[in-house]
Image (cartoon, rainbow, N blue to C red; front, side, top):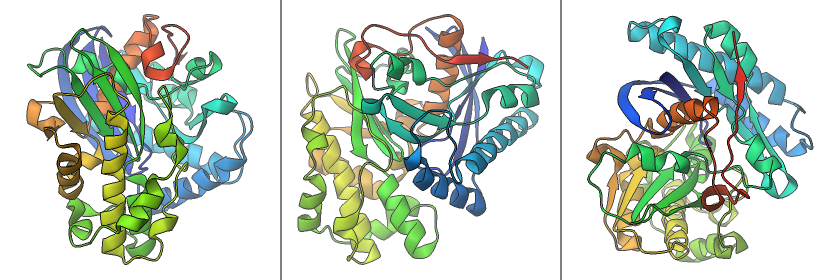
Length: 364
């Protein structure tokens, strides 16, 4: 099947688009990828929605700016697909399904609650393509964490590559997550902690930019070790997996009084240290860490990871994958798996009681 995957991650920077030819168990071909950034006004709406979402107590609720943000997310994803099709000489008839993750605004699996905004049926009608959406709810309803989801697909994505095992696949978006792929195919996954979210928020607040381009500001700063120690003093890091995080589970209060460069250097070190902490919870030491997400584009963060992990760390691009599009590619595959009733989650990835399928199908 030819599937388009869409991903708007916890960094809230834009929509990634990827075309994959797959049966859900194997990749037959990676197609083109695309990206539709959120405009400054759209990011402002999403930022307010993340705050207002704290009041949600049931999945259908859309308080404050959340309803407006849902319309923004749906429209942006539709535009992203329409532009992607036009740029690549494709039509709706060329695509079998779209995997639409939506935008997570609240994630509290301990309360049986995870909310991804985005109108799946509305997107299907506008695109005239079947859309699979609401990927996380079934897992949470069954007692799982509902996250991370991409780790189910990471073994599929790397299957044709000559990479060592055990392999650590590290996605550094707004929140970080790790996938451990063992020599015998063992699969363990969980959220590591904040990745880019706290850094992005500080840059947005101080200079109005969406992120620290190439980690340039952080590169000129000095890590405040006392602030770093306070950031790491959180019980989450001692919890055994499975475990997952809301984007706003941590704040950068210990760095509030620091100059921007020092704050970003400290927050980058925090991200690296959360990965070190996560590594201690894995069944074995990965022979290689493969990094995707925005963090792979931050040389300062990548350097800190190598130094603090004392291991080989490389970006996904270096092995022929797309550091930017790997999550969107994963949701293309997850959509096909959903259509086929295949598992999206496992006990080792979300704490699901058994392998579980999920997702909801909307037709035009």
